[in-house]
Structures are given as structure tokens and as C-alpha cells.
Length: 406
Image (cartoon, rainbow, N blue to C red; front, side):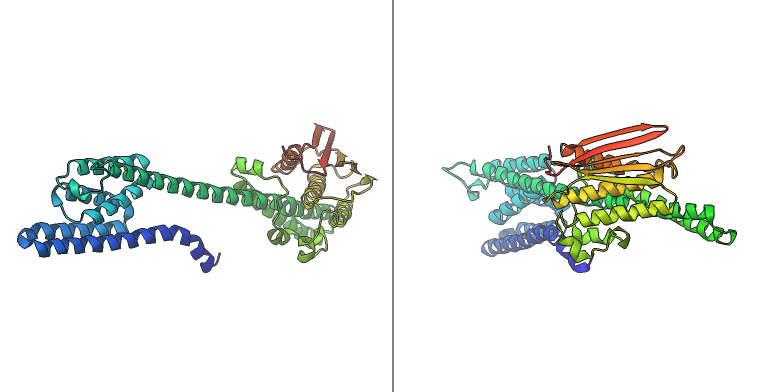
């Protein structure tokens, strides 16, 4: 994050405090001038005017630089001025209302108590004639205090709503990053570890140390990546809300390696769902080649005709699901037992089935990739069914072309 961006983000939070400090300074100057005028008219009580001027100045400076503590000082000074001071009524009244609003923004209960203290001081003040009245009644002042507290409460509620919105956006972005790490990085690292393990079984003794180092490095990087995914997915509620297809091409392209296609960032960002079916075909060919190079046997059988219209979000989901299933073959299936993947383009949905034989002691991993896709597909009114046994594992999934989120 640049310094310019950081400054812009802090600006909305700094503006209210700056405005409050400016208003406080203006009102403090007005109160001081008012006290000075009263002193010039009647210098017989110069001690009272001097004391009121000094106290008002100190309280205003405190309030301007430390609003949370200074607001209570302003309330105390205003109450004292209303009861015994008898000077600078109008500036002190506005300062007291500002302080009440500041206290109410932090705590509505304390703001109400501050307003009650001001009301009591007004009603018992010998100088009530100086306060605003309606039909010789001081009811206008309680209404003014109530209005101030209401405005401060609304401002606080709006601020809390904005902070909650920013937090949700951040957590959703983290969930998206976690999914891309899982879909791309963990699968790639698993492929590297699988290739290294395969080479260890057939390589010469001179190359064994090098391939062993490659495997250990890949497994170590995979462990750290999974820790990062756990951290990003620490808020389970947000992870459930992330549907796995909300993508920002500017960031997503940073995670796409050449192994997953030859499209440039400009081509990916401008591609439609139909245009990306070529990416799906390249992905299938690449994954099959990688599995075959490491001793995995299997078939990918296709049925039906590709649709003429397909949303980019649905295409992203389909490509990610296929990549995840190939990754699970590499991580959890027996190499020589074989696998069968059926891909069908039906009238209203993309249908995929996979059947393989799990390893006796397969690494469980995070178990979050397929679970995330299950939640997404079921939220679209699609179908998801997994059958698991010691000697058999299969999945049947249907992804609707139209995203009817419930």
C-alpha cells in the first residue's frame, strides 16, 4: 500500500475530528471575546472574568486535542458557568452541545447523563433569561439536547455500518485468495511432490539426493501454504458466503501459471464463458499428461455438445472444479488402479463424474477444496453426491448453466 493510498483511507476519519477542533477553537475565541467585553463593561468583578476566561481557554484546548477526555471537562465548565459564572452563554451553550454529541457518539448512556446535567444546570441557573426559549419556556433546550444526541447516535451507527462493510469486504477478499491458493498453488505443489516421488522410484542413485530435496522443498512449501489458507479462512462465516466464482481478473491473473493455459492477462480478462471452454480443454490435456507421466492411468470420456451461452462465473466454477478433481486424483488415488472421469454437457447443466481407488493412507490435506465447491453448487440448486469406501471413491456433480442462487 502506497503512502498516498494510506493517506486517502485515513482522510475520512481525520475530517470529523479536524472540523470539531476548528469549531471548538472558533467558539473558544468567541467565548473569550465575550468575557473580555463583559470585563470591559464591568471591571469590578475582574477576578471572576479572568478565572472564567482561563478555565474556558484550557477546557477548549483540551477538548480540541483530546475530545474523549476534554468533552467531560467542557460539560463541567459549562455547568459551572451556567450556575455561577454567568458569562459567554451562547458560545458555552454550543460548546456544551458539541461535547454532549461527542460523548453520545462514544456512549449513548453517558451522553444522556451529560445532557441531563446540562438541563439541570439550565433550569437552576439564575441566568436562564439568556438561554433560547419558546413562549417563555425552556422546552426548546431539552429538544436541542435530544436532537444533538440523536444526530451523534446516527453518526455512530453509520460509522459502525461502514466499518462492518469494510470488514466483510476484507474477509471476502481473503476467502477468495484462500480459494485461489488452494486451487492453484497447493495443487501445483502436490504435483511437484508427486513427480519427485515418481522420479525417486526410477532415478539413478546419483540423482536420488536431488529429487529428494525437490520433494522435501515442495512438501515444506505445501505445509506453509496450507497454514496461510487456514489463516485466511479463519472466519468460517465469511468462507461460507464466498461462492468460489467471484473473481477480480487483475488479481486472479497473478495466480494463473503457464501450466494452466497460454492465455495472456488481457485475453483472460476479456474472455467470456464460451471463450474459456478452450482453457478447460487445455487444462484437461495438461492434467492428464502430468498424471500419465507419474504412472497414473485413466480415461476422460466426454458426452454432449458444449452450450452456446455460458456465463463467465459458471465457466470459472467448472474449470476450478475440474482442476480440483484432477488434483484430488494426484493426492488421494492409487496410481495404477486407474480413474475414470465422465464429462457431459447436458441441456441445462454441466455434469461431471469421477471414480477412482483411494490410497490406503492418503494425505487428508485440508479437505476444504471440494467442500467449498459443494456449498457453491448446492446454493445454485445443483447436485452433489460423493460415495466413499476403502476400495472405491466416486463423485457426481451437476453445475447449472443459470445461477439460481437461493
